[in-house]
Every structure is written in C-alpha cells, then in structure tokens.
Image (cartoon, rainbow, N blue to C red; front, side, top):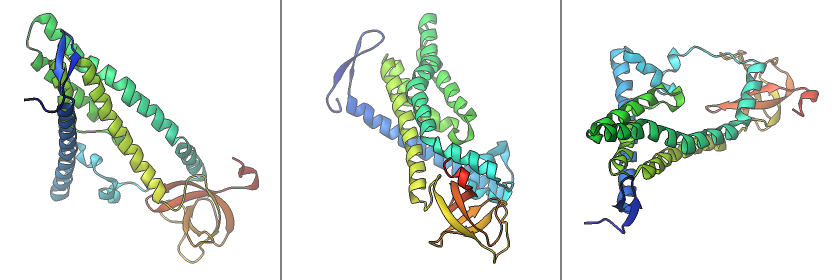
Length: 274
C-alpha cells in the first residue's frame, strides 16, 4: 500500500513509481540513526579511554577538547599569531561558502558516480548481482570519511547508515535521486556546522575585528599560560592581550574568541585602518 501520493520517475531502465513522503521519512530516520550511532560510538570510545587509561587506535584524538585539555600542549600566542587568526576569522564565511559548494554540488556527483555508479556499472557489465558490489562500494566510501580533516571526520558505520537510502535508490535505478539525497545530507551537515559557529559568535561579548581601549591588569600574575595578559575594557569585560605591560592602557583589536575568552593584540595609530 502506498504512503502518500506517488509520482512516476525516470530510471536507468525505464520508469519507477516513487512515493516522495516515504523517501523523506526514510531519509529522516536514517539521518537520525546515523547521528545517534555516531554519538553512541563517540561516548563508548571516551569511556573506554577513561576507564582503561589506554588509547587504542588513537581514539583519544577524536574526543572533544573538553576531555583532553590535560593532555594537550599549551599554545602560546604572539601578535603575529593573533593577526593571522583575525584574517582567518574574517574569511570564515567565504571559506564556508566554498566548502558548501564543494560539499553540496561537486562531492555528491563525484562520490555517487564513483563509489556506487562504478560498482553498478561493473555489475551490469559482468551480469552479476548488483547488491554486493554496491555494498562494497558504499563501505569503501564510508571508510574514506575517516580520512577527512579532523573537524569533518566521521566513523565508517554512521556514514554507511546515512548512505543506505542512496544505495537503495541505485538498486532501483534512480541514480539522479541518489545524488540529490547525497547533496541533501551534505547540505544539512554544512548548515548545522555553520549554525553552530554562528551561535558561538552571537553568544560572545566580543567579535573579531572590534577595537577596545583596555587597561592591563597589574594585580595578578602575568602573563598567563598562553603568554597573554589579562586586560579590562571600560565595561569591565576581560580580554587576553599579547605584547603589553601590566598597568598599561592601550588600544587593542579582537582577533578571535576561544571559549568565553576574547584574544586581542595592541594596535598603533597607523594600524587602526587595517
């Protein structure tokens, strides 16, 4: 029995009756299952490390920074480092847009045609069952996501689960719809990451590029573990500033925010127009 209205969609061999509501429901279930599975695996790795004190397969590298602060080397910031960071922050939307185009337009086409279209074509050419080769291609595709840069790295099993709908669509010949589903998955991931970053920036008192006149604290031990000095704005908000002296009053520019802290560097009159 159908689930909602149906449409006739073109396939590799002809046409196929498709129920859009059913596909949307399947996509939502698999997406949620993938995210939950990712979280469960993540927590299992964390507790394995915490309880055993060992880091099998380098699992500790995939844990949240909150759980590995004691093992991370202290990073010291210089004025040059903070200027580079400000430049990085200012180009964040540009980088996000470029990454979004690659992830939503280019990657789905290339990955679907390579890792599922290739096995499908091979199965048709050899006259063998399509499912085993499609599964093998999907497993390889999912595994390669573990080689992504750390921030975008995901486990093989959650990625494989998220791709099950695309695999099914290839089986029934709806290759173009598989590409659209893949693009939708990547669009959701990009949107969530961008939304998280926007929320982090919106919550913070400081924004990269803002300038303040601050007075450097001369009462507590200086500098801190990052080589920065605690300073206060006229509104008594705290900034951590590089290359200043205790008790000094100076103009600074916010380079970035880390957690609840704003990191800044001093600017001269000639540098205020940068």
